[in-house]
Amino acid sequence: MLKDRLSAPCPKCHAEMMYVAALPHPKSPTMRKTTFVCYACNQTRSYALSEEMANAYVASHGDPLLAVDTETPATHAT
Ligand SMILES: [Zn+2]
Image (cartoon, rainbow, N blue to C red; front, side):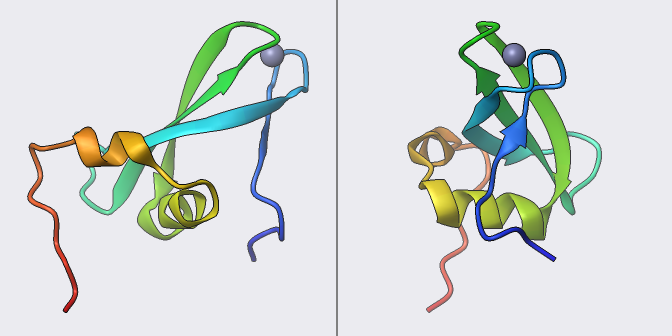
């Protein structure tokens, strides 16, 4: 179940990390390498999330960086 508010607490300082981007996982096509940044630690952290979870972050936060990923042709459901 998804929380109503998508956030990822920093494992170090427990501040809420900002969602940055979700990129295709190099080893698992069903996973997304999702990047968060903790501004308190000034550090990015990447997590492998399921595509469903990553898409939920994208939908929740918007993802301008995802459009930069030109290696994978965008699939548009029409
Ligand atoms: Zn932190």
